[in-house]
Length: 88
Image (cartoon, rainbow, N blue to C red):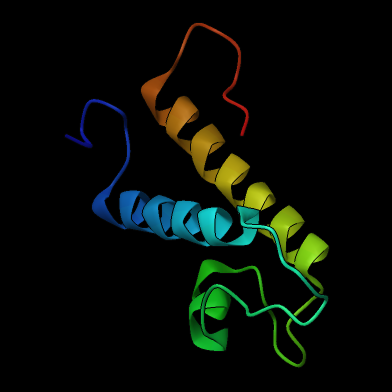
């Protein structure tokens, strides 16, 4: 499945985790006191958290989208698409 798209198993797994976190964050929050979609360790593994306090919701969404774009661009480079680079 992943060979046709140019993703390794780790990249596909990471993309799945990013999508899951973004889906959780897309749900409206009633207050500013929101629950992070993943543990600190999971966010650290994805490269969107460096320690200390978990960033505000908006900043975390931006970081997750940036990481997703990096993965998609990496896949595009491996797959050598003729069209424009993928965007998230």
